[in-house]
Image (cartoon, rainbow, N blue to C red; front, side, top):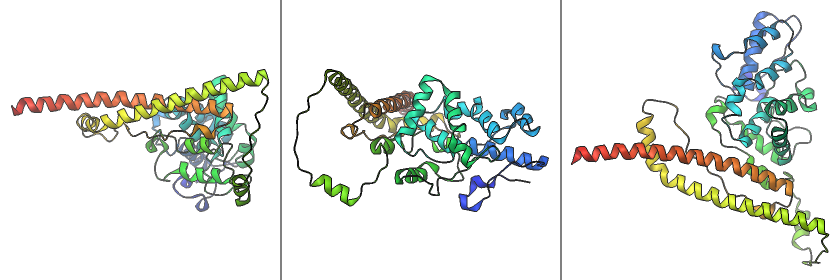
Length: 332
């Protein structure tokens, strides 16, 4: 029987799980378990959550492993975990991990998927991963996707390799348990386009380049684009300031909210996260209008997450305040 042991150990220690003609029922069970386990980020799937129709189609040979992966990734089971309740930039990171077995190599990859989501929607974005040349080359029709980020790949830059180590986490925990904070979004934005490591010669050339400035003659159309760029940059600066303000408010409420959480969640293992920390983006390092648009979109996701956490913190702080008032009343 094929067992999905690859999720618990580094890539060097497992053999990829593959379908083959004439596979026994036991082997098909193993392939199905392995696919659920990897595509859903090591999450436990209850019997009532299983996709019985795609499973039956796969067992009858009507679906390949690739199409079974597609069915899981487009299901409400996947969407509810990694799209509806997950910030966009974190969801994109996890799509790369679950469907291509790696972290995003650079910012242009994540921005492309953001555009697909805006223009065509969730299911079309899932298709772009599974229908890609990379997916077919690495996994084909019959291999269950697996984590390959701990091994260098052809054409991979240093940033992409480092990001893979950041995004993987422990082999024994689920992606849902790791949390909804993005692991590599800030690095991608700051290093775009992306992860190129400069040589000593390039650095010295920049340091000793003559500091001359020739005022360019900017055509009227370029002036309009420059104005749009500056307007967008100002918007991003305002978002930076708002993020800092929200983080400060959250930090101020966190001690009282922690008391409220302790009261409200007594005996429960799942407690809300109030720990989102994001460093301000260095906007002066971004020279592309497209990159700046992506920065704005990702900052907006951060703002929405912080606002949600702040609302939770206020509610739990109120719970703590009520409990303290009752304690004072009894004391006096």
